[in-house]
Image 1: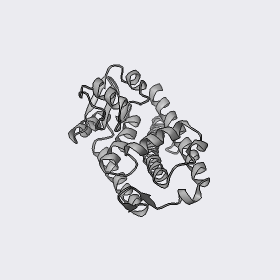
Image 2: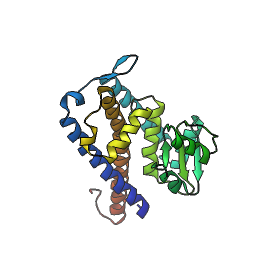
Image 3: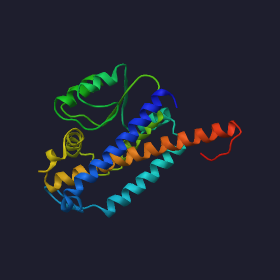
Image 4: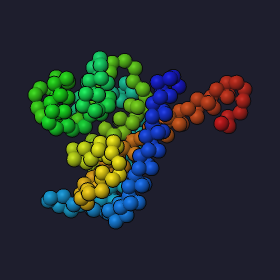
Amino acid sequence: MNIFERIIYFFLSIKKKTLEDRLDRHFKSNPARGGTKTVITANETMTLSAETQKHAQLVHKNIEEILQANENDPYKLVQYIESQGTKVIKLKNADKMLNAICEDEGLILEQRGLAALYINIITGNGFSFRNAPIFIMREGEINPFYMIHQFYKWYSLKSKLPGFDYKSQQLFKIYLRTSEAGMTNLSLEQLTGLKEAIARDREATDYAYNAAVAHEGGKKAFDKLSDGEGANI
């Protein structure tokens, strides 16, 4: 791995552990809410749990097959994303431009208000206070593990897994930068939406993290074989 890939690898491992710890603490302190199987909306009640889990497993399988077919090549994945109707915009200073609205490079989900207007202006999508999901990235080399992470989230979104709606994602952003105490007054609908948003991010992070671990492990095994050592790591 080069230094940038090691930084991404480290970031994914820390994020994975942080999300797991915070999620466990939060739902242990809210056992009744954390164990809920239902999302309540204004118009309907949908039973999730088993069906969502089954859907997520199918999405995981499909993603694995797509990644294998495209050799985990980030540039092929970009082409695949574009072929499915999602715009991929490359900007010279994408990281700095997105930092202005507290977003990271990669998949930008639905925004509203001034954030959406900003996204639409810098990507040449006109003047609107809502934006469609879009990829925004810097020019140059694309880190494969970061791309896998973003691709996983994008495909989950396209597959209509829950947790990507605007309200749930806004709660998720608040959740990442606040204490558990600031999240104690959520309604059942809000808490369930947040739980799904966290689940989607964990799924993507776990997959990218495991891909990075497998890549590093395979590289070490190859280096040992090249040096005349055994294959055990």
